[in-house]
Image (tube, rainbow, N blue to C red; front, side, top):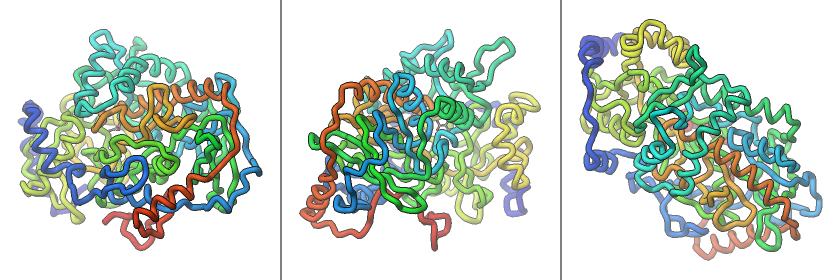
Length: 536
Ligand code: MEZ
């Protein structure tokens, strides 16, 4: 139910609908895409980036907000901590309780390792839970991991680490089977075969889904498995600093109770960072689809002990964040809406792009429509374009929306908008951290021994842009991989004397570079006091 300001534009969208359904927009050429990205994608806005002056990626550009966190002070000094007072002593310490952390824990436990998850909120409070549209795997007769590789490699601008991407796509069918066996209720046809759809940039239908709450269904299943196995979970407790041993190998973390601020030492033979993304950093003032704790903590923890970052200058802005009403500003409108047939149209009802271009191209295209071309719709708090959801029912038949994307239907119905009958307003929202810590194919960081990374905190799996459904896939594939390899490695590790000497070393580097800052990191939680949604 839209107010009168929207009626003229809505009438234009409705009038054009029948013709728009039949219209097959042409795909952009590679040159057109490059030009579009350079002019409109936020990653190309040079003024929004700073150069790192210290640490392993010195000289490279990252968003201002991340730069501030990476170069900040530790929350502690070594003198605050008695490293002999060990509260937790485990084989594998997993920092983060999302899909990657849970998958790693299940595999490490399966291998017989003493495993512990520490999470600053609760297990499952993670971006995995927020993922909607599905998880990719090439398991249909007309598809193959090689075709999946080509799609993802091209979509990521040929920048993915080939061995990581090859592992992602080759392990995908087995990952789906593993989830299915654990109890994930994937959408299936009456004969039991999985229903799959397209996502942006896919040449085959390989998106497996549980309606439009695929991540929640996967996370529910993983969390149950972790709990049923009796794996130790320490919740409402953040890792605020990694601990190395005297040989410079990862050997644990300093933990902080989020309520009491009590500090504790966890010693471990191997450590897995699975802290997820960074949407709550609100880069460039964007709203976000991310969960409350997505503040790039793992990147900060790793960077301070010398782990390298890869592609930390590239972020994903999901093309379709909710732009109206204000109460759900930035919330995810799953790409599956476009997979099922909804097209993006401007205020005159004109289709301005192919709805399944890759996400960076789609986001840039919407930004162009709302800026230079002035073809957006004024929502009262910014410009947006229409996503013509009634097309879905026109193409797939009555009931398709309720059956395939019930969460979308409910989210908008709360505000009186029936997406079966009315289109919705969307604008890009900060969704995913393409870059992160640099790992080998065994999941260990390239330059800190015994420090593993999995999930969104990894950089390089997807290159400089990720396709839909490859993130839920990577949390499973690289979560399990990290759990398997970290537990195997732990068998041969003898932890040396614990040290936090890296903090003073980092402080000295900061001072030598002349950086003056009072900021401490990791951020842990966003601070919305005195700000409207935290957004510029
Ligand atoms: O992979 C994702 O980011 C995803 C599935 C999001 C979505 O649009 O549903």
